[in-house]
Length: 192
Image (cartoon, rainbow, N blue to C red; front, side, top):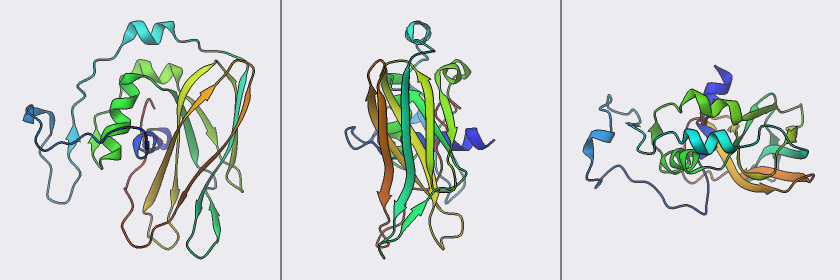
């Protein structure tokens, strides 16, 4: 369940991609009807690319180390303790979910075959995580943190990174808390 909820985080923020909009789309059938106040669920347009995923390596000698945290406006660093960080190959299939969630929308669950290529790590008491045995390639790295005093509101953080063979990459998976506007809610569920 925790990994399933984690996948919503993966797509919330990726500054190098355009936003996917539900309104104005000629295929109105892709949005499920929901109760007032709920986030609509998009149907995936991108079919699962079984051939592409079959070519992806599952083992390698790369290491990804990082820290998942928020920068609070008061200057305090708020680590994400005991949270799951998801590391998924940056494919077009994964990118569709990233764009949808970035737009504040929910997308239907990914194909279960994508899970075989997603790695997970749990953050320690200071928000640090490490994942080894990664093949070279591009990845979406995602986690979510609870906003201080926000009654379980979550802030998702996603970065796209490139890992070369044999490299150890250090990553700050962080975001500044903006008290002036509400955060995008939810967690990433990409390939979980």
